[in-house]
Structure formats: C-alpha cells, structure tokens
Length: 104
Image (cartoon, rainbow, N blue to C red; front, side, top):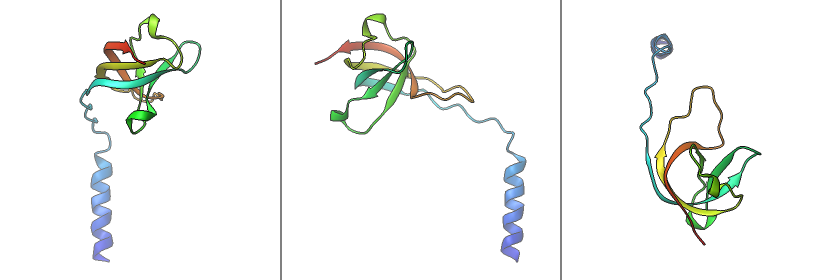
C-alpha cells in the first residue's frame, strides 16, 4: 500500500509540471549524406538515404535547388537539420542544405 501511495504522489508531481516548456533540440550537421531525391507530390520532395549506405533516414529539404528536383536522382548532401514545428507531420527531418552534388 505504501508503494502505491508513493507512486500516486510521484505521478501527481509529474503531471503538475506538464505545462512546462519543452527544450528545443539542437540542430545537427549532416555531412556528405548519400541520398536519393524522392518526389512526394507535385510540389514536395524528400531526400531518403541510399539503401547501399546503411539505415533508413529521411530529410525534407527546405531549400532544394530547382535543378535537383528530379525523382530518383542520386545526390550527396550536406546541411543543418531544423526543428519540426509543433503539431506538424513531415515525411522526414527538415534540412537546410548548405551543399548538394549529383553522384553516380
């Protein structure tokens, strides 16, 4: 019974602080990421990881140049990840591109 009372008190204290602001995640550098441009719809593109290079990752390019808006184009990209806005669903992590190059 004492354990149940202690758990109830801890839960109450944790819930009381639920309105606290969530700390922003730090922006991460993405360097020489081997990816494939994927056309999501008529206006949106994503950069998915190339399956030849490991685990799946997906980025939503914020500033993808027009000449790279080609479905299934293989690229190497560098940039800085951005925070996902609250209550927004994206196909990947937003990425502000600093450099992008085509590759074979």
